[in-house]
Length: 66
Image (cartoon, rainbow, N blue to C red):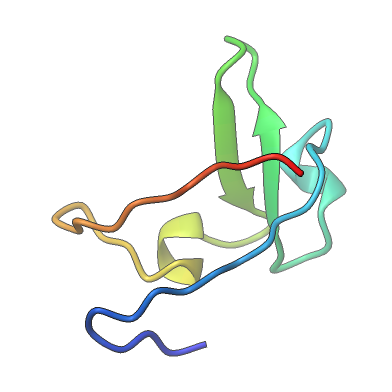
């Protein structure tokens, strides 16, 4: 997936996992960490790289339920 400037990208992560290790290798997972906060991670990878986000990014992540 290559993101163009000002492009809106929809990525569906799916249901909450117990741990990020529950996701397939290289795939994102949403889970509640030990403090009860929602985290998004990539199993054996980087969520920042997966979603093309760096520390100066103005990108936003919208969390929704169905």
